[in-house]
Length: 222
Image (tube, rainbow, N blue to C red; front, side, top):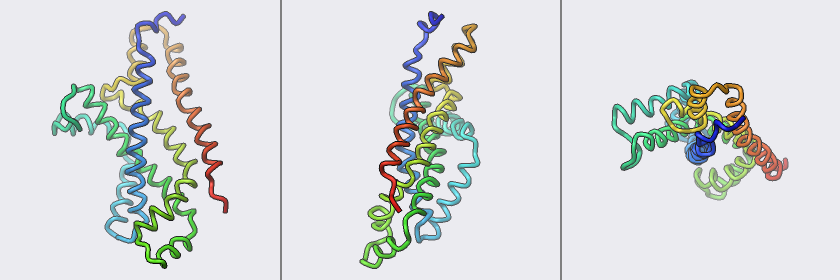
């Protein structure tokens, strides 16, 4: 029944999916945290930028962002985000960039929701002893905000894992592109769909269970 799989690198395709997820998750966490800091910061210009970024990016389809990264940055402007490499390598990098640009908007809102759970009095007390806004944010507020935001961030990570399938639109050899290739060549639509769906369940279900457990362990008791 599964003999036709011998000609396809299913594990390799899912490894590419994992790489896309991990690299994009790290980049999104960094950029999303900075955006959240902007949105709660005292500088009107930075608050406006953070708000505009989140509202605009969240309302643009991910496919449009990924295609712009490939057609706009690589094909038109010859930006490949690194020296050397072929078009497949460049498209992988650009897919990561597109996923970071898109996902960071949701990470920002998840972290901002965590920031809103931190009592205002703690920030005021930190400012009263002479700490700057940046020190208050990174030493007092964000450590507690991340603990409160584990649940929402878990949902964002699971969504990111599934969103990596959009990278197939620019030829990144991940699971969705392999599925398309297999469906075109094999008369096993239901079986192929079941295999790819099972693979994604193996990625997302443990993530949800583990991070859900972590969220309960680190939750701030009020």
